Image (cartoon, rainbow, N blue to C red; front, top):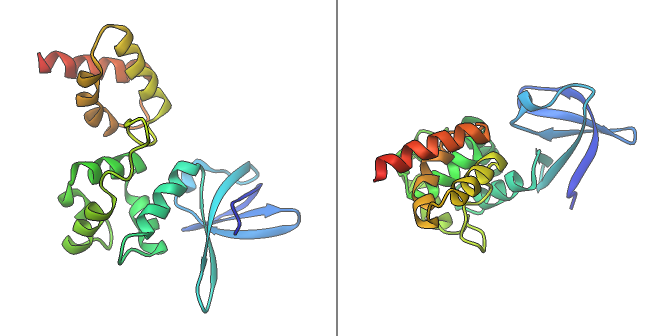
Length: 190
C-alpha cells in the first residue's frame, strides 16, 4: 500500500496530477486542481485501487479527505471514481453535514447519486463520521477557533452544537467571520 507520496507537481491535468518523486512520475486521480501549482512540493495522501486490469492511485491533500473517500467507497454501489466525482462537486464538510443530517435531497444533487444511492449513503455512514469527542469530523481550523471563542464568551456547548451545522455550510471563512455569523445565529435562537 502506498500511504502518501511527497514530491513536486509536474503536471495538473483535468482529473489527475502527476507528482515527481525520485525520478518517477506518479499519475494520481485528484479533485483539487485549484489548490496545487506546477513546481510546488506537496504531500499527497493516497489510496491504491487494484483491479484486474489496472492499478489506480487516488490522492488527497489531507488525511481527513482520504478518510472521507474511504468511507464513501465502503458504501455499496459507490466506487472510487463515483466518490471522486462527488468530492469534485461539494466540500467534504458539506458532504459530512448532509450525511449526518440525513439530507437525501442534497446527496441526490451530486453526480451519479440517485435516490437509492443517497439513502444507502445515509444508512451506511450516518454517525460514523463523528470522532470520539462527538465533535464534527474535520471542522475547519478557523471554525474550531471561532467555536472556542464563543464558548469563552459564555455560550453553552449545547447552543454551539446547534449553530455548528449552519456554520459548517460556509467553509473557507475567517475566525472573525465565523464568530460574527455565530453570534447572529445565537441571537436568532433567543
